[in-house]
Image (cartoon, each protein chain N blue to C red):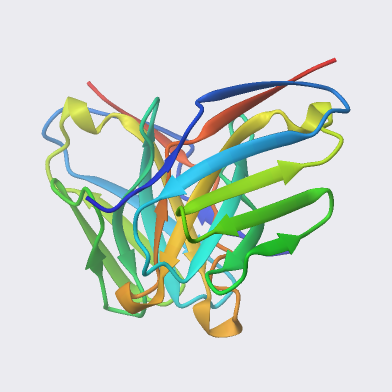
Length: 115
Length: 113
């Protein structure tokens, strides 16, 4: 069974803290994505990666960075957390080389609260 | 800017009826269009996709229609069941942009018994 896991389901951090959100997939997928989901705004793409050490900005990259040192792991970093980064963060992976470019698998999400 | 969007934020459907969820898009360069279902407390789950060179694709109880002339995508769910209550998102993939996966805003479907 395919699986995307995220390091935490719930996280509470203080303003100014550095925050790491980890995502691991066990499907050998090339592509990995980080989204944030807020009420009424749907899923907004923060960053994505199509290969190890490669990263591309999504639609809202400001205040975030990412790291992909290994194929299976994609980390989202909040350098200095702010209250407007309180949100649900969703990680996903997909494999365009298998002809299933549209089929992304999502993790359960991390609900981050910044106080 | 370029976007994928939805017409209706909430859709109430009687159990057993058919549901139709609509989506408009603006970028003609999309290669795939996809529908996802998100149940409460879970991540989105893939339902069905359609290549941009197709106009219809059927799955189990679901049909996706693509009208490139008016840049419109729809998801039809036959004989809607209580388990179909969820938020549905349309999304697009652009292969030339590194297979960037972009989502629309979501429609909540409520199935009435």
